[in-house]
Amino acid sequence: MNARGNVAFQAIVVILLAAVVSLLAWPHLRSAPIPKFQTEYQAVLLTGGQAFYGKLEGFGTSFPVLTDIYYVQSQVNPETKAVTNILIQRGKEWHGPDRMYLNPSHILWVEPVAPDSQVARLIAEKKGK
Image (cartoon, rainbow, N blue to C red):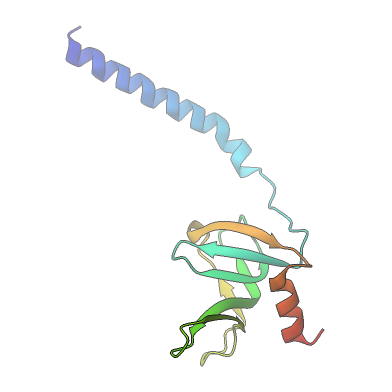
């Protein structure tokens, strides 16, 4: 067997081994339990850089849904150049959304929002709790 044939044979072996490992791992990936969050709200970062805070359901499925959604909007004072961050509740937009159906491939990470965090306190203030 020449050098070119040897390289092709090695490439085929590597591809076959990768396929076998994938097939063996597949049942474990499919049977992984859907995470249950221990906090009322979760922080969700999407691939476009948007961060939302809300109640995430169906994480790990094809159609995760975020409800009771909030996001941070930054405003710059033109005179002082000071930046102020405001927590905004979704739903006040023209189309009045009450939920977001997320593309799971665009979710970078999900983190719990601690009940004593600044975000949780601001949400509670907005809700009048």
